Image (cartoon, rainbow, N blue to C red; front, side):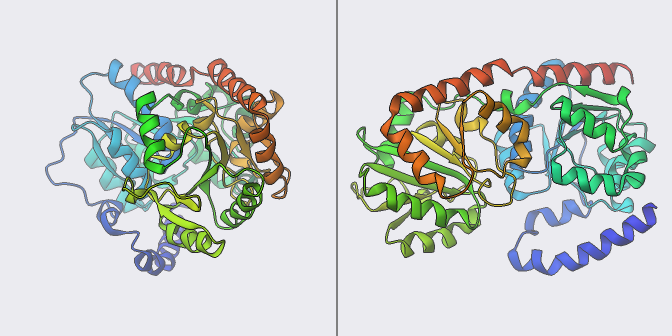
Length: 423
């Protein structure tokens, strides 16, 4: 089976290679993904944590901090797949940590990397199933723990279709720490034995945390030219197809609410120029946040575009209303906890299948607004602008929900300690 898997993986990689070269995505990740690591690497049986991209990297930050307290003398390896995830990790890694990219899941590559790193433990954030890596670790009797595990509706269908292939790989995982009872049931449905599954909760509730001082908040609003009398709408993690909806809505809202300011943060900052063209087409002045602050004065026609990675949470903190993207198009939504922790009223669309449990929790507790379609965005924003008391209550209920659901990180640490002590 693994020979066939290698062949399929190689064919797929060759097909994708020209696109990656054209987009310039390989660069620093190229050699590590081929298994080329520093010659003098000496990690002394580290704990290896894998977080594929930005969301997973932010979720494991707290876990890494807690593990440092328990395993004070241990070094850590943190791997990602995406460059944006890698950048986030480098922002909180220690100088003794080894931050790298996950090797391509080809048997001859992963065996070399696993032998070179020789981890004490391998931790997978969320649900990254790489058969060759899992098998290489299993062959060396290195325990594997999945944390923050979840299976979306779409993934469930795909996994069930290849359950006969996945089952043996999944059961090489020592423990599956999942977000909810629904996820536990889904892991059972795709073949994981019940004794390996623990429902420990969602670490993203723990990852949501206060960030800026009041002084820094005031400075950030001042840099943008957003005054005390203004309201600030932040549209985070947007995708193609959403920015046009947002700009059309913003133009309509401005006709009755002149003091509303807008910031759009595309999920992929490399799309910033594309968003800029849209902003100009709608008759606004596009302002890239990376160019601020400058002495430019306050201009009514500005629309801000966040074209950097890792700072969106700062803008959530100074927002008055937040729309979370990936939810009006078929992307599955993004993390609504980041703005909710600051008590912000949060709006999102109907496509939240990647965060279904969190979205359902917020809606059932009247702690956020879910749109049924794009046309409802205009009315929802106006409702919050015209009823500040209701906007405040919405934000307060969101904060209360987060407070009630924290603790997954420490529960995962307990499972990790049990697994390590058992090996």
